[in-house]
Length: 357
Image (tube, rainbow, N blue to C red; front, side):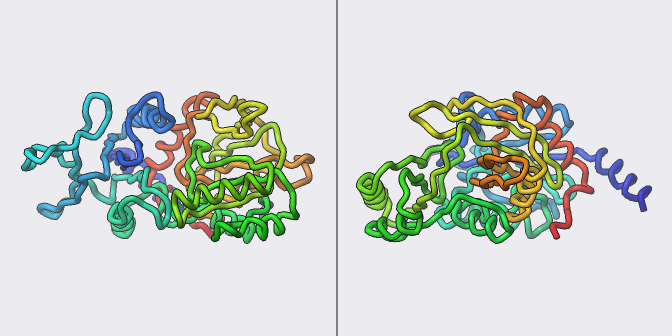
């Protein structure tokens, strides 16, 4: 059996693997070097080259899938010299408005969707359906649709984590703009609290600290005025000088970093916003809970964020979020070759399907 697995692995390595990264220009997910996602793009390009993987970046806008002579192709608009999708005007017609079709098949193509939007609020349901179709055909998709849905709502992620026995900050959703007093009652009338959108970004946008009932009521009303059905969460505030990001790939922890809060006036710790990152050694309970969080959301490649307990050796950390599309540029700076390690892992077809039980 071991010889057969080795044979499969050797055969897989001989194939010209392809990585197709799907982007969404409508959400500014473009190849812009000074942005967090732009930096990830550069990391993927370099890592793919080192891993001998052909990498393609395609935008959801204008994308379609075609079939010819039993072969399947992705057709997408090209990008200009600055890395932005080159949208045709009304005068442009015919096949020349697309970049060269990319042949794909389930034997050698890895699909990496980014910028799908958030569950129930995606810019175009068709984009999600395209990825679902690829997954149904047997393509490896990172993240999977299940993982993406589980992580796209912070409240649902919280539910899944608590169901798995993990410790999380007490979190209450607001479904009505005049419901703030009831919510604060559930949080034991304690201020400050954290106000965040359930479908927020990875860059700390949409997360604020609120010091009083008056401020909370005004903030909620303003958000609901902007978007009536915006999902809003009020969360217990846990004072800390730092949080921890753990990058997990299947059953392995690839790296962990300590992220200092940005300043005395800004409690957020996103590296893309200027937070300082340093390596940190995890305790056994932190390793265990990070892995449990990844499994709770059906994640294969995820970033788990937590606030450590006061007694790190004996108490569970507070799991904050699990990201299905993590940025690992911060960890890459401290652990060179992490991105290539991820691609090399998925280049081995023995790792394309795992038992999540």
